[in-house]
Image 1 (cartoon, rainbow, N blue to C red):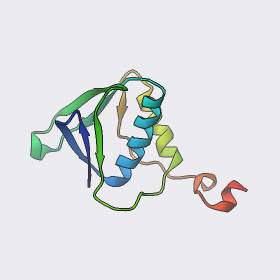
Image 2: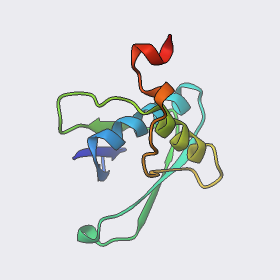
Image 3: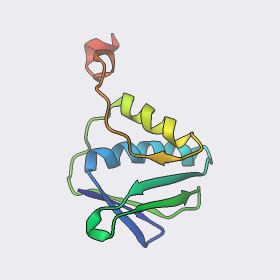
Image 4: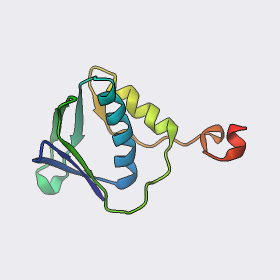
Length: 111
């Protein structure tokens, strides 16, 4: 279980695979200078509810991973997350969609 840490204080635990995909989307938005809202549901153990932060190019963000290996990337999931990040509601974690055969990352799929 990794952690997303915003501005040194706001923290949320997110599974490493999901955090990797969120990092890709957040990094792409910030490279383009596009600020956006990022929201998540809090665990009941910390009081529940929902938290939203305003992410901008000057934000201090830390991605802390539990595991040592970077998970494979599901392009469909990156696209689904990017879609939410570009909507008025802002970025939020959506369930991972199934990868299509042509997005599997295998050499045959890109031949």
